[in-house]
Length: 344
Ligand code: PHB
Ligand code: FE
Image (cartoon, rainbow, N blue to C red; front, side, top):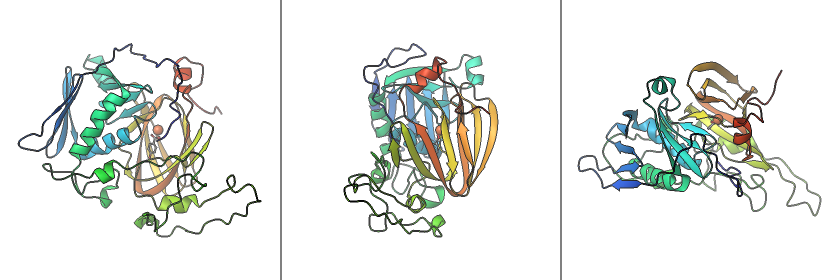
């Protein structure tokens, strides 16, 4: 997802006061599985036929490799995203926009209470380089970590080819709006985006736009439902319109959001079709907070201090509305901006 990352000369915040770790290593392919192993600081990553294994000085962790690759794909494609990307309840990254904390158990009350948590800080581009090599090496031919489970092969087994075409997809980031001259194009059969099997009933007509001469580069419209019906990926908000820091990031969802997203700002959800159930937990501890069932037409605002994960039983359309201002996380941490967007 594109963000307003340009912080100018502003200091990168570092709430844990961690020094930067810059030791990385890539081990050659394993004789048995054919997969490489990766080291970033004191974190080691290894995959076998079914699992991703993470070891740290405070303990080790196992994640089913399909879930791990779906989460890693989002962390890579979104450039560590806004705030925290929890791969599961134990492991993840927190983005400080230029630098990133990678943690084991640090946002899990059960781990912190036992002193079993571990966190290290990296330069974002250096950790991203290792993550990109990992997603490329660990994704085999026929498996697409962006796709709904019913629309892809499986990730299981020993090393067998790759799917770099899928894992190197460029995300859509409109400069102003989809369809404007020189901006990211609308999707059609011809440019490789057929209508998804679950959206066969979506109207594909486009609005008629009659522009006063001289305003051809300023006035435009497109069918957003038709555009989304042609998305080939799931759980991947793309910037479709930009007004200053206001970013409309619609997306199509099917199955489970591969990460528990820990917000560093408020964000709005508008459910455009079908339905998603959201599981909301406290951002710091993981304590359960709420279940939010969204049906078509519902609008919700996620507070800045929670984590959330969505479950979409049918492919659905969701508009994620982000405030891309780089000032927000510090304003909220310092108590100068509220954790919620509205108070009733
Ligand atoms: C979110 O964390 O808010 C989020 C991420 C990906 C999606 C939808 C929502 O597809
Ligand atoms: Fe979120």
